[in-house]
Image (cartoon, rainbow, N blue to C red; front, side):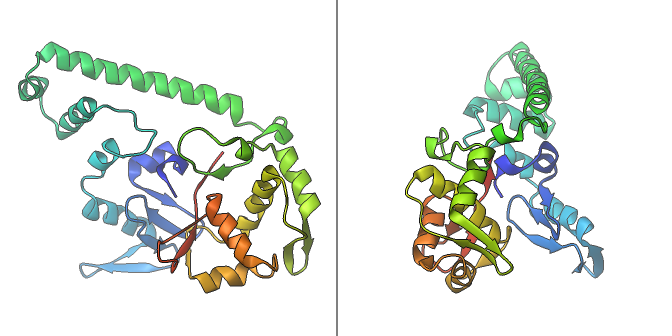
Length: 251
């Protein structure tokens, strides 16, 4: 799961929860909800262990967040330095001296950060109210793999188009889904891959043999299916091809 998939609360606290585990945002350390964990001669349930893990293993997580290399982090190097200084608890006068600027300049920058935060909160409120509602579900866009830059036109698919392609190319039975034939159009390929990848559990890692075991019952040419899932960004893998996992998506 990437930073862009996390909620504001999850980003701030440094961890997120799935139906079966608590997971660290930084190192992906996983603590199953039905297990108890030992540390320093004490035992902790998963919800306490994840907090302890973040506190002890990632004491600089705020700094890591400030310096995150995501395309969504548009802070300049100077702004990052100032935020680091503010977080450290330095007084404005000390920060000004450290950066060889007037104290008034530091106070103005702090005011600017505060105003941007207010703008961001208002924008989120507007966005959530406009887009996060059940109206016209057929017009909502399909969640697709995270991509750098602008969204590729191939991936701009409405829920209505998605359902139409599923009916055309997939069959469902008691043994699962099967792909009738390989689609010729790019959007159709994206649609069927979006459905097929749902057969692969999130937040788990697989060998190539395990991925093949999942894909083979769906389509006879499981090799092209696996390659396409990788090429279109639905699956990630290590360079040596020994480890596979389901990639994050954005809507």
